[in-house]
Length: 26
Image 1 (cartoon, one colour):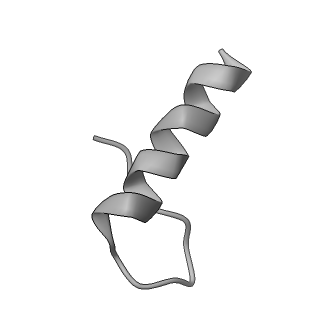
Image 2 (cartoon, one colour; image 1 turned 60 degrees about the vertical axis):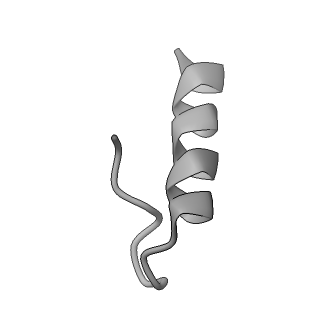
């Protein structure tokens, strides 16, 4: 559900990577 990395096109894959990174941080 998180937004993809800023400055890039909105792709489901980018959003997925963002979600995974959030899980790693938390």
